[in-house]
Amino acid sequence: MVLIWEVTQACELACEHCRASAEPGRHPDELSTREGKAFLDDVREFGEGQLVVLSGGDPMKRPDLVELVEYGTDAGLSMTLTPSGTDALTRDAIEDLSDAGLRRMAVSLDGATPERHDAFRGETGSFEATLRAARDATEAGLPLQVNTTVCAATVEDLPEIADVVADLGAVLWSVFFLVPVGRGRLLDPVPPARAESVMSWLHDLDERVPFGIKTTEAPHYRRVGLQRRKRGRVEDGDDGSPGQKRRAGIVAGDGFAFVSHTGDVYPSGFLPEAAGDVREDDVVDVYRNADLFEALRDRSRLTGKCGVCEYRHVCGGSRSRAYATTGDPLASDPLCSYVPDEWDARHANVEGD
Image (cartoon, rainbow, N blue to C red):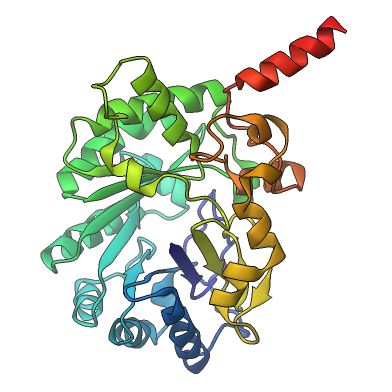
């Protein structure tokens, strides 16, 4: 179970792909420190060690961030952070967060050079600030994760970014395939066939690098791995990504929930359909019982290719991308190029009739 809390929408950057369409100032209706602590108390119902990812905007814009990390840690939660690469992410700030109990820090890297990364992030100096923060986090004893967006503007940089991820000593590379929401609607995604080749390349890479690899909003990475195993391209019993077996199947609303800066509960930050409000509702109850979440967990309700796909129980497609492109979170994921046998046969019958 992955729970994301967007603690603020404020951020100094103007990233081209920003889901939150972040602005420099904080929203007046953000959850307060008291409300945030009450929310974290409710999160404990998910179980000891529940993962909480503090995101934004830029979480560093909240003056109570260290207090919230410490409170969540004392409550038995596993608190992690995805800050923006700005000058606010100083060595002292990182050490304070580490002392408060932070378990992991994730930085974003969307270009292999200062010019390409900074252009994507909309701020000169973001590349150097990100690398500096990454090294400071490692020195503070924090496991480091690197997040990268895959779209037409960044896909050619992926091999070089992977080298930087290795040089930084990261434990995980999270590769996010663009969903057209927020400012990301103005970006060009990679075509389905290119996405497929990138995922196959990531499986090859996973076999030889010291860090783990996972995808975000691209659960068909799991399907690609299983097909590789069937084709005998990897040893029997290994789908090419051992760590991915544990993470497989998580999609919006199914092993994943998102709480906005104003308290709305979404299946994902990329699927902004509210199913509750933590000011009035228990987030655990919303996740377990809200109609939208229940529908997203029922793979038999998927439609189109995803609905008949033999891999739907280990993949399920990006529900966020389906919603962003069709308005229906149960529709097929348009990024997937795979044609299930049943879908192929069904359409062949229609053409024959």
